[in-house]
Amino acid sequence: MISFFVALLGLIIGYFIYGSFVDRVFKPDDRKTPCVEHPDGVDFVPMKPWRAFLIQLLNIAGLGPIFGALSGAIWGPSVYLWIVLGTIFAGGVHDYLTGMLSMRNDGASVSELTGKYLGPVMKNIMRVFSVILLVMVGVVFMVGPAGLISTMITGGKKTSTATTLTAIFTLIILFYYLLATLMPIDKVIGKIYPIFGICLIVMALGIGGATIIRHINGSHPMIELWEGFKNMHPKGGAQPIWPLMFITVACGAISGFHATQSPMMARCLTSERQGRHVFYGAMVSEGIIALIWASAGIAFYNVAGKPFSTAGLLAAGGGNSTTVYKMSVELLGPVGSVLALLGVVACPITSGDTAFRSARLTLADWFKIDQSNIKSRLPLAIPLLGVGYLISFLDYNIVWRYFSWSNQTLAMIALWTGATYLTRKVSAKCGWIATIPATFMSAVSITYFCFAPECLNLGSKTNGTTISYAIGILGAAIFFGIYLFKVFLPEVHSKHNHHSSHIAHQH
Image (cartoon, rainbow, N blue to C red; front, side):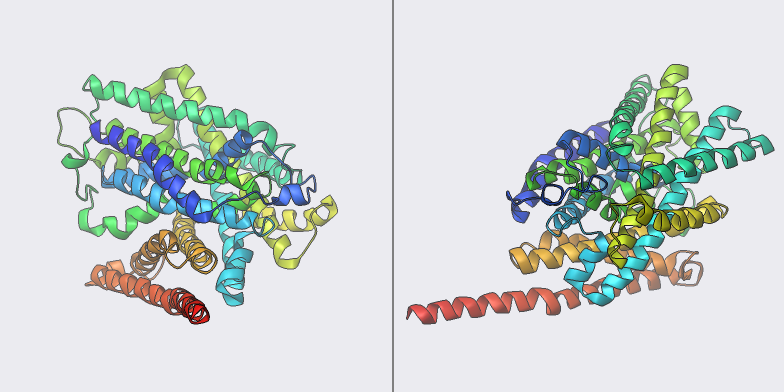
């Protein structure tokens, strides 16, 4: 329990200290924001900061900080370190920079931002990459809650009735997604998100409180970091912490999906000075939610009197609708579980709808299609939702695995975009707050791509793990080298020449 509270305190302190530092580096000012400059009543709609914060939190949360954290907890309490450090130094920086850069570029989507700062080739790559990712996110957050509602009704029994119910609820959610994608942001999303946001927060507090009580009474002790600071995955070396845990936790530490969501709120904030509270603050809040669910998952399946183990969590499938249902019912009882499950159901739905909405906006930015008229929104929204529905028939776990890798790869690219902006527009030194996590995430993504069975599958080969590590580190070093020669060194050289010219002029 001590590890949990130290990690929780670390996230809170990180928001106030490092979040403030990042804000000072970026230097928000009093320039007019996109929604003040040209409100359109659809996507560029002024909102109060507290409402924008709750919408941003629900946009980015989804199933990630719940399913991802529970799955990441299979590796043991070392997941706490990644949630805390990843949130503060990677995820928070990532979300803040993409949101603030969007505000300074007329609410541009992440693909357009990438093109501006990394070049036209990367722009086109990100356009395709981000749309595919957003559709996959929409599918994950459509099938997941539909399965969870079905689980609630059938009591977790896997029958033909459960399958039919899942299909019906998938169609209902899809219809809601169509409405949320087409309607002005303040008509649906702006009205219901604050309510669901409160449910999400109360649900997390309830799960966390119940876990602490069970730890105190000794029935399900939480594992301290120093007691499980190793790879606790029951499959051991076949499932190494690096890079698998760093990909699995995803939204609970850093997520490229957030880079597609932050521009939506960038179009609704009335001042740049609201950015730290909305963008960095929402990411820290998500980190807290992930920490609660990770610690709850470890403790829930850790029975007193037995050796510390995460085998029970692995046997339950890690993060999935059945696991969440079982934990909610046992930890909070009938009344509390309804509230908890409402938060868990609403959470992914309120990310799925904005995923498709963001995909529509990305395509609109790509092809320069004005979105003020519903007739111009329909031709983009309907095909996106149709493709999403077809993908929903694929195996959920396969879609999630591909989403996890592409998600962290997008985060890597977004961080390099932020690093380039800071180095060129602020100072050469300031770029490091994004360069370091960008390099780290490059190593994670490349290593995973080499190791994972759905990618190159080197992990199944002799010495494949070592080869994957080497390729990942080498790839990150190459990206870092490109950054130095293309962005950092020219900036330093330019400033040196300017300084020399100034001295010469004085003499």
